[in-house]
Amino acid sequence: MASSSNDPFIIAALISRSQQGLLTAGEQEQLDAWIAASDENRQLWMELNNPGVQQQNVRAMARFDEDAALERFLANKPVKSNVHRMQFLRTWKWAAAALVVALGVSTYFLLINDTRTSDGFGRKSAQHDIPPGKNGAILTLADGTQLVLDSLGDGKIATQNGTQISLNNNELIYDASAATDGAAHNTITTPNGRQYHIMLPDGTEVWLNAASSIQYPVAFKGKERRVKVSGEVYFEVANKSWQPFVVEADKMKLEVLGTSFNINTYDDEKTIRTTLLTGAVKVTPLEGSKPKVLVPGQTAVLSKQDAPEGASLTVTETPDPTKIIAWKNGLFNFDGMDLYSVMRQLERWYNIEIQYVGKPDNVIFKGKMHRNTNLSDVLKVLETMDVNFELKGNILYVR
Image 1 (cartoon, rainbow, N blue to C red):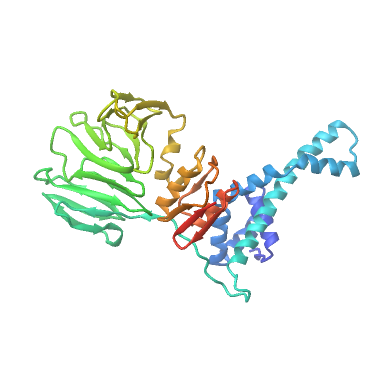
Image 2 (image 1 turned 90 degrees about the vertical axis):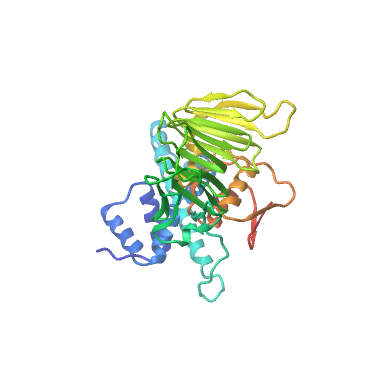
């Protein structure tokens, strides 16, 4: 077994080679030994493999002018021919990329360890940070009783009109096989900093983003299955052609059969957006525009602005619908998003308050990150795009 090294630059070089797929068997063994040596090393390894940190290295590479550096090198060491020059150039670019990644990893390694011992005496001190959101929700029963689901253990938690409600691994499950009727309604609500997955009594699966809710009957007994939502919700609707599925939202309703789609109806957004991934959805504004039927890859955009003729409904093409449901898959996808849209996402997920100092430029962001990372790690990536942040308590100041 190879011994692990504590030299940060040796470890940084091994991590850099690992990210490029260049490790030898001996180097892999050495890196594995270092990772296994302590919980701190394992945590650091996970942080360094965070896509946000890797994006910083990519941006560093983009700012590195390898051609200018090469010209300076060749001025002191001429090559024999243009062929040799091109071969050397290709080698140089790979070497430059590896150098920037290694330096970035080394700097990050030293920065992380330095911030953990910031009192000047080598003692580790906790840094103010805000952890990511997690799974959890509040279930409101038909009689008004509220249950905090992430504080309950597995097993049956309630019975409503013959429908048994239970928890299994923090997932809410309804058994309506013995239901007497569907008159009783339940509501699931996710506060800021929470998300939740639920299977409705008909087998439809629902994912709620932070600050969202869904109201539904404990059994679907009528000619249709009708629910009401707010916030952002993703559906995978069980296909029952004899019993259409209807979603009520602010200023609109959706009619579907077997379909997967995402609806965003947050109060602080200017539009209500419904994106279809599979199946078909009929979108009907409650006033104004005529209904429209979506096909997969389309988004219905309903304006919220009050107008004499009512809300305006348009349909746009969505080349990558998976970007819309990145949140459901545990990701932030900031590609093409402006500053204010990104800040609204962070405000909901980290349960913080955003305050703007002055009027910041409306920066357009790129890239994606895991949502299971601390706020500070997200801000480090966003700051590479010339935005400054200051966190004081639960308030994030944007400059």
